[in-house]
Length: 461
Image 1 (spheres, rainbow, N blue to C red):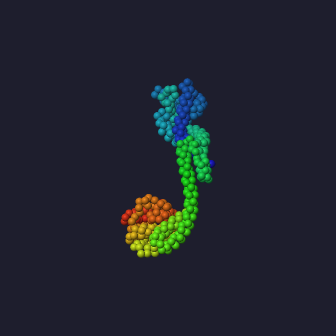
Image 2: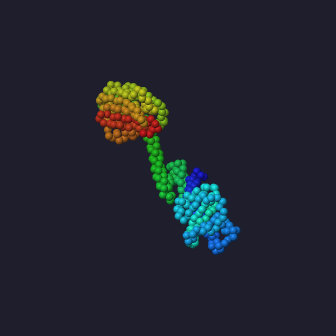
Image 3: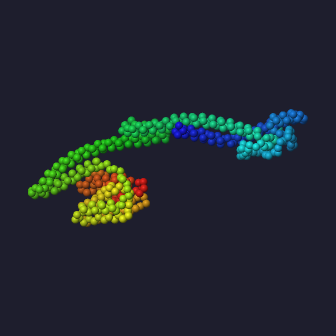
């Protein structure tokens, strides 16, 4: 209850109302003290009127008048003459004198707070103006304790009233918050939960209804997100179905082409000059078609496991790649150089990073062989503050503009004639699985450079 939004509003409202009442209490208690003292002056003035009516009063009557006024003596100044109108013994000396005629608001507040927090009884003198112009000033002497007790009683009543007001205000605000905020928010949460259970069901998409501007904006944003996600899920489902159909077609087509490949092997043995001239082209075309079908099937089945990250000596991985590719170089004038520092250690999956580097080196080697010119390939690496960077550079002819546009897109980024374009797409996915990036750093007539970035920390750059 108290951890809910409406419960928090209930608590905060009570606290803030009480805080506001405290700020109101300070000047009000000062005002109460002033009124209390003015009332004592007025009562003392009324008591002194009896003496004006009769110059001689009995001691008992004078004591009763002073007791009713709540003072020890009364001094009235009339016609520039100070007269002790009523008097009685003062138990102690006067400690403070307060003149209410010229007291500022700040002075009244300061004196009130000081009296409120002073428990000892003191004898105080209070000076004020008589009511109805009955003289120039009136002065009384009195105990401070009755004033303090009256202020405490007034403060408790104010506190109780403030508490009642804050509880009532908080209760009504609690109801308002539940009606205008909590209920719409719960509705949004309900739509989200319903959509999560069945995202393909269009009935789970929220329909904005909130009257509060901010909540309506949140509902509209959620509606847009759900709509786009539903469309993406439908498109993904259609692509999955299409991928299944392509896999079946590729499987059957591969079997057909394999059979055709067996026949072309026999055709190559024919002594007919025309057949001998055309057979190699036919064999190459069928071989490329079989390779494309196998690549398509392999990519369709690809479910790369999450990388098992360990500390890997990168130079050893690069050495394995160089050793494997040198076997395929044969008589081609291509040099592969391992420039990775001896002590270079990276956090990666050794098998997956081997496949990525192997793919990039093989692509570079095939590009150089296809260009029919000597060249070199180098594997280098360096360490930065946030990541490790591995570069594969070649001196080949560079990538054509069309290949650069769809470099990491399956079946579209192929550079070599007859290639499927899956190698770079798979390599990019493997690097992303490490939280890194595979980038084309540069390409042109002087050569091509790919860069692998592996994060040293949490995968952010």
